Length: 343
Ligand SMILES: NC(=O)c1ccc[n+]([C@@H]2O[C@H](COP(=O)([O-])OP(=O)(O)OC[C@H]3O[C@@H](n4cnc5c(N)ncnc54)[C@H](OP(=O)(O)O)[C@@H]3O)[C@@H](O)[C@H]2O)c1
Image (tube, rainbow, N blue to C red; front, side, top):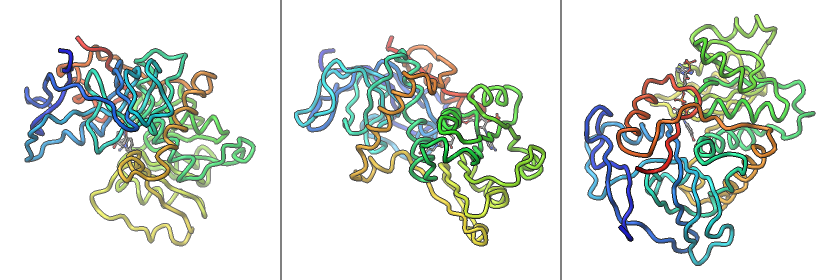
């Protein structure tokens, strides 16, 4: 087993109930070169991106495809060009969609997109954070260009569509940390309670009319919108409730075009956030993910925000990962699902 490791992966893209949708495998253990770290994976969390990549399609892999883009672990080896970390460091990161995922005992990752794990969290809680907090951080502070200064945000509000999911749970906390009034959407009693626990000031239901619910809360319009579900479905509502000169950012792909013209009279802006953009295109800004994760880590250790782990599904194996994928595919997950250690 010296040069081998356990992993969970797939050769074929199958419905999750198919016994071969995810498989327990033994694969070669990689070696760190250049700016790569070799990380011993201690815990992972599961995201809709895993289920979207695994979704059924007519394609067969020659080498197993490993999913998993949320990790907390310990640096085992560093490549010869690494300057940010050394063996023994505890780290957390989301990773790079162009490379193998991290559902394996060891994983290679470019150090520029890795952060220092919060000291105050165990590995399973730390694994709940990287992908969603990077997504929320980039959306709020890069695309919506929200100020970090709470006094600038005193009279400003943000609408988060899908407050209770993985991204919404941390986005609420980050927005509250800079003094915004946060309106989050949730449609069930348990998700309403959860978004309030994360700090939302006002909760509205995404299956009911937004405008009248906002009016009931004495809100005429919203300066910022973060769309974390069904961009197409919520598009005309977003155009209706955004304030003149407001900003909308979405993280969810559309399969049909949306009518940008609806934003014209208000001179409202729209932007995408895709957490994988920087690593996908190897942009010079890649290193900001290292910086943002370190900032998130510091905020956790200073009790300004907390981890969003809500379910622990046991050790990292195909059976438990299938349960996690199945739960995510119900579209009712609250906070994050984590798995920890190998059998
Ligand atoms: N672009 C990126 O970089 C990026 C990064 C991360 C995630 N994403 C994408 O963002 C989406 C959200 O990810 P996530 O991890 O937060 O998802 P998630 O945890 O699976 O979200 C689950 C929540 O969705 C809510 N929901 C269901 N139907 C809804 C609707 N019609 N409108 C609004 N909310 C609804 C449910 O709340 P109720 O039960 O209260 O209805 C549920 O609690 C996914 O599509 C994911 O692939 C993109």
